[in-house]
Length: 113
Image 1 (cartoon, rainbow, N blue to C red):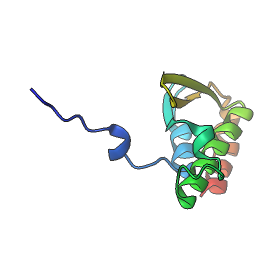
Image 2 (cartoon, rainbow, N blue to C red):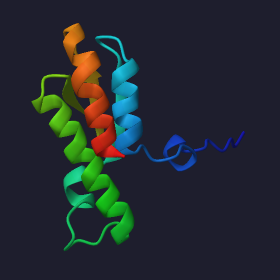
Image 3 (cartoon, one colour):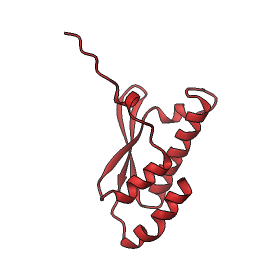
């Protein structure tokens, strides 16, 4: 019996910086979101031209935003290997003091929009 299995990456809309920040603002510690699946370093490299320019730029900005959130101590970045050039890039929400919720997260969302 042949069954077609739809690739979830082809169906779901790409995550944006704003939606990543919105998710983090509502996330509980330990919640996780996969913000990209593929070979990130290859796909954001302009010389390789793996993606069209608008998609590459959006992916580059999303990855930079995830890195900034991790750098601020709001989340951790985890990478999971699924196969050759097939990695899941996961952002895991960290416990944060209440003062962050009222001060830094709205600023990050405004900056990402």
